[in-house]
Length: 410
Ligand code: DI6
Ligand code: FE
Image (cartoon, rainbow, N blue to C red; front, side, top):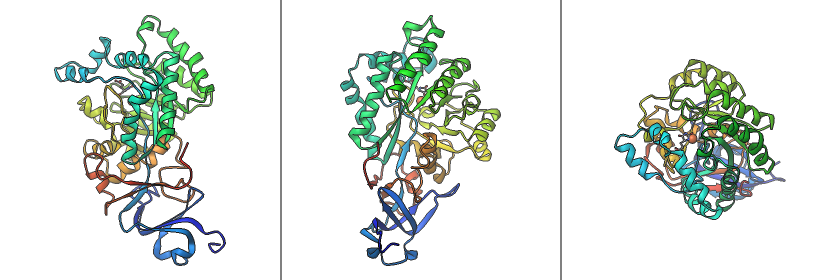
């Protein structure tokens, strides 16, 4: 068969961390990876190829060492926003709490004011460098949430900017509508009217415009109640949209069980997650997205229940939560290192968390996150000899070279 239909390209001479199977690196020593039509066509040891590489593919690339992995996926960001919150950073260092700042009109509301005031171009100019920083360290797929508009026009502008970032950088962007992120000041005395408007008007409008890939909410004492959250997730489900949730970040509201009951893609944060939530997530296959940047920035002390999640077989993902308040951290590599150091993930769990399980948290696991036949040929070549080195360095060093076969992902 290979005589008549050669592969488009064959990469040899590197170790391949396929992330196949349920745990570990899925390592192939001295591997060979073939690509056809932008898709991985074959992965295995070079020694087991049926003929010399040049007879099997139109183009043979000898990598001369290093490690191949799937491209990274950042499955939880709020990277489209205007302004910064460095003043709050200082206030927190002087003793103010995140909740107290939020209740005093700062926090998310401060970013909402700045984002509403920014034009689409200004928002793109402010956000693009953050996405570029992620792309340069190997992230080829980024989830971007709305939620700093809290009015229809600005929510739309955020989602349009997110799509534009994908086009400009040649990466895949998945958009998430987060209308229930905070109650905007003009709705302070009209909670239920705000929730109705988000669910019955904004969500269907933006979905019809093709701007919404998934729906999220902030289920928290300082956010939205479980009942309000359920209303929003049910509205999304009725439109055929997948759901995910900010759950159990600052308190146990039962959010993880609530989103798992709706077959949610993920429950995110989870420092306060209890046994019931874990069981519900395991039963539904809902991914636990761990966000060590927010844990670090808020100097949290309560750890997410990693060992219990592991024992229950809940897939764990790792993401940046890149946002101006609680995780101003444009580095998934740093998040992966923190997931090991702070949350005690193994290095292989952290890499899977930023590839395999991150893709799953976006509903993309059939196309991304592992190096297996049928997956997109979107991979990284790292100048390291041991994949654990990718987790060991603190920050984005060393940088990979992206190998993208076929058209840039849309
Ligand atoms: N949880 C978070 O950590 C971010 N949003 C959320 O729901 C914080 C967003 C911000 O402070 O701007
Ligand atoms: Fe978040």
